[in-house]
Amino acid sequence: MQRIFTQTYHVPGTLAADLGIRFTVPTDCQLVHVSAVGSNTYAAGLELGTSADADAYLEKCSIGVSGTPVEKGRSNFVGSQYPHITDGTIFVITLDYNYNGGGAANASANFTIVLTFTEG
Image 1 (spheres, rainbow, N blue to C red):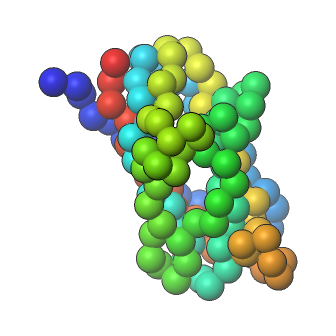
Image 2: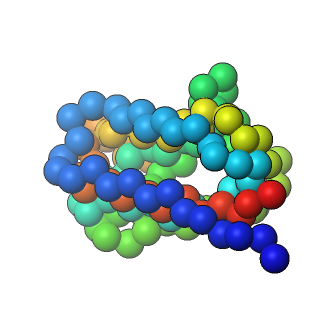
Image 3: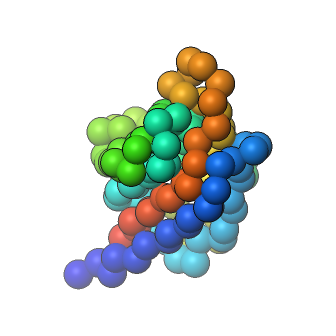
């Protein structure tokens, strides 16, 4: 059985700039699920990738708004496959704070993201 682990981040308040979160993956794994949300009605733009390719795993998309998370899974990832990530990869979460679906520039607030991985 593959071990499941999560990475969770929360940034309180109204965002005033784009956000970049980076961490080193501790083991070979696959990204199997993403849940992302802001508390107001303005959707930030989310990309997931590596330090070499910011959208290698998930191309820019809107996060959920008004406290209702958007979920991303296999069919949403690049190539419609679970990304396989090797041990030591620098995983990058990039957030365009005022993306709002590519429309009006308004800042998202109280950003939360949960990434679910399976080990192996």
